[in-house]
Amino acid sequence: MAAHPPEARLWWNEPVPKGELLWVAVAFLWGVIMFLMMIWWHLEGRQNLSTEVYRIDPEVFRSRTEAFVERHKVGEEGTTGIPVARVPPGGDAYMLGRLWEWWPVLELEKGKTYRLHLSSLDWQHGFSLQPVNMNIQVHPGIEHVITITPTESGVFSVVCNEFCGAGHHQMTGRIRVVEPGKSGG
Image 1: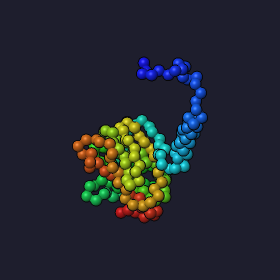
Image 2: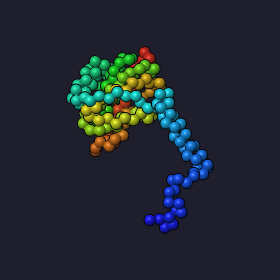
Image 3: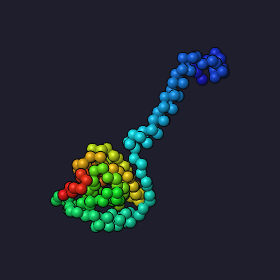
Image 4: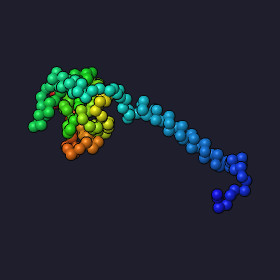
C-alpha cells in the first residue's frame, strides 16, 4: 500500500505529457539505431569473428594436428623445441591448447587467407591473439574454424586468458606472419 495513493485509481487511463512521449520516442529510436548498428558492425566493421563450430573427439583433433605438423614442419621454436609449421596460402592451420601450451607455432603469409582450426585436449582455455585482441574460449570436444587473413607481418603472441591451472601464466604460443614468399626462419 502506497503512503499517498494516486487520486485516480486507474492511472493508466491518464493522459501522458507530450515531453514524456518525446523521451519514450527518442529512447525507442535510439534502441532501433543501436540494434541496426550491431548488424552493420558485424558485417562491415570486421570486429566480430564469423566462426564455424563443430563437435570433435579431442583425440581426433590431436591426431589431425600432429599430421598437420608432420606435413608442414619447417623447424623448431628456439630452445623450447615446439615445432614451427608453415601453412600453405589458402590452407588449413591447426593449433591445439593443452596444459600449458599452444601447439605448434604457426607461420603464415601476410595478405593470404587461412582456415585456423582450434580446440583443446584437456580443459577450457582462452585463445587470445595479441596485440590484435582476438579472443575465443576453446573447449575440449569443440573445434572452432576461423577464416583469417593477416594484414601485417610480425610475431604475434597467443595467450591463454581462461584460468586453467597452476601453469596458466606460462601458457603461451606464437603465430609468425611473414611477407609473401619469405620464411620467418
